[in-house]
Amino acid sequence: AFMAFRLKKVRLIAGGLLWHLPILNKIQKNLSLMRFSKTTANLLYAGFSLRNALATASEIMNPKYQGAIADIQKKLEQGIGFAEALREHPDLFSGILVSVVATGEKSGQLISVLNQMSEFYEEEIIYSLELLLTVIEPVLLLVVGVVVGLLASSLISPIYRLVGSI
Image (cartoon, rainbow, N blue to C red; front, side):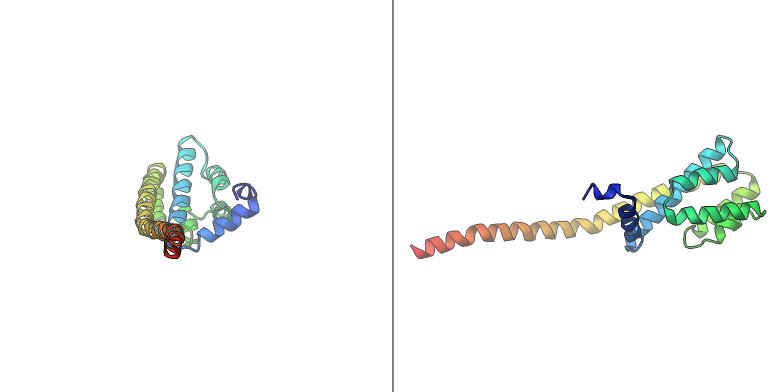
């Protein structure tokens, strides 16, 4: 099973499945937005142009975001603002991110705004993971209880039959 995840096609299918599960969808989206924000901010801070920073950030994103980032780059070349280009992909880039990026563009603080958004999404990921663990814990306890019960009954049942036949 672990060897299968080395295949790109298997990873794409598994990643696609994660987008359809409610809590995991939120974690996946926030993780992608955190990576996008942090990488873009760091590259801008290092002196990259916005176009080059987006091209580099696109390489670490999942395929869903790579197409959107390529579209955003085209919009930037046409003279459309960064926030406006993000706004055209509401399913991938949240309204909060778009609004904050618009404010950062106007104030000239895009790098610090993107860093703040990456921290925000990191906190959201932590919260979502804690929620997921809270949901999974009782389910795992129930599964372990059923397995232990089945093991106990499979061990005790033959003993009762043996004692009953004596």
